[in-house]
Image: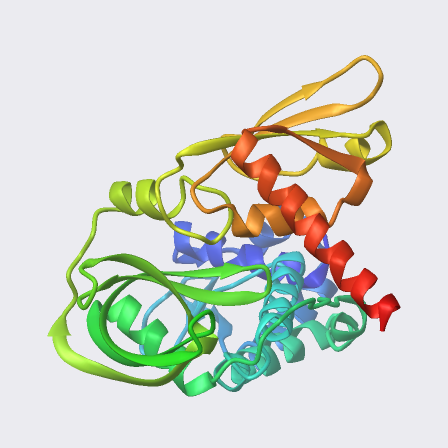
Length: 325
């Protein structure tokens, strides 16, 4: 047993029994007296607690400044510490500057403990990498207020930039949940102006203020039906099912992908694959299908197939016009 893992066991031992003889400790941990002495020194110097010998009781006891007999704080094995540091590193990669300053003291403490075991925690930053594609710039101040309002159940007043209409609108919203989707943040919220659930891109919120007014709460069941039953980030209850047939080569990847929780997959004898997914707004699904080029064919519905063909023809015209010029 590694020293750190062994030290972890002292907590449960002294939780079960206030006083322990040296032999009880040696037997349970299967260690020598020399190892026990090293453990005592490390617990005193690194973890700031003491296990002292009581001559009258002829046993060891945990002595804390507050006179309790509980090891202070949370204890983790070195594997758990590595897991925590890995998660923190991924959070930092996910949104640099978002939680880093607040987690720095914890990271330093975890790193210090691991270094006593000869583990280089800084190596994680070199071995764990998140690659971002299509990530939009995020105003940290607005994100923090949106997150705070979501957690504390407070209404927000925001200025939102609608990219489709190229205009700004002022809204009062009751945030319901934060969504991290394809490297960008969204907030599903009740819009008091439109009186309906809408999804707002957090990076499109240019101004935000938290009001001292409780949110209008929407049930999780309704949120799921309205915001998550269709394909992708676009809200709305699913009204159609797209049926897509992928080539045998592309099917090797698609068969392991989740496009939607309720998707239906059929693998054919020739290795091709048919995927069926529900959608309410075809824009995102259309873009994803176009990315597969000739490796996918839309089988239905007819309206979606026609939109795909129209998009391809418009793209073709752009290049034909360029060549003509």
